[in-house]
Image (cartoon, rainbow, N blue to C red):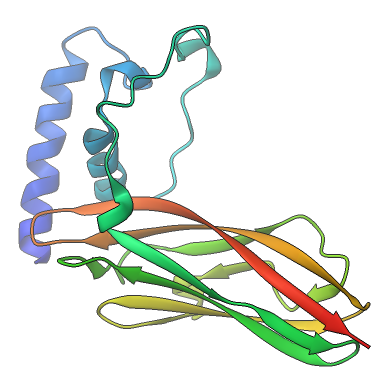
Length: 188
C-alpha cells in the first residue's frame, strides 16, 4: 500500500503544479480547491496545515456552495461512553471513532483529540491525546481514547473534545474532524 500511496502522492503533486502553479491561482485560494483535492493534499503532507490568510478568503457575503462537500457519514461514526464518578475519585470516559464500511483506521496519520475549555467538576489527567504518543488504542476498524479524570466538585457538565484523524479505503485516505460531547456526572 505504501508504494501505491507514494505513486498517488507524486501524481497528485504534479497535478497540483499544473493546475495551480501555472494557472496563476494561489494554493491558498479555497475556491480553487475542492474538498477531495484538499483531503488528498493533507494526506500526502501528513501534517497539519494552516488555513489560508484571511486576505485570500472569498467575500463573507457570498453564500457557501455545499454541492461539492463530501458526505462523511459513511466514512466513520463516533461513540462516547460518558463518565460517572464520585468527588475525589478517579473515573474515565471513552471516545471511539469507528471506520465506516469499506474504510480502515489510518495508523500512519498523527491523529489527535483535544479538549476545549476548563472543566468545572473534574480535573482531566490530560487535555490532548495523540495517536503517536500512545494515547490511542487502535485496530483495523476503530480507535479508542480513554480519558482519565478525577472528580473535584459534585455536578453535571458536558465537555467538548475535537478530534482530527484519517480513515482510508482501497483508493484513498481522507482526513476528517469530529466533535465529541462528553457527559460527566460527579456525585458526593
